[in-house]
Length: 129
Image (cartoon, rainbow, N blue to C red):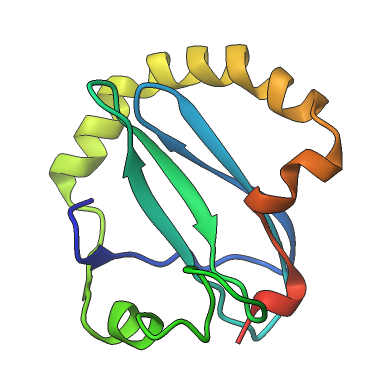
């Protein structure tokens, strides 16, 4: 996914976990309601190894990643919606064994964290539009 691109995930109401992969995995818990739209920023961080951190965009509060942020409408309206291309599918299939290995090694550590430490990586029902 390139800068200024976006994609969407059509999902069912309830609790889900999403993941990004760079040099390591980053997880985001999402508790979503039917009929709502939720937003997440994917931000590359680190050098020389890059990770892609998932930041939930909050409905309320202060900070860079909120629906009230002056940049939010720009992010929503001036980014290109992309779909997964055949090349992207091939890329994902080729890396699937490595992804599964990474999940098997990093998922238990994420699960064992107390819920209080997952607050910044949780999309809440109230964050939907």
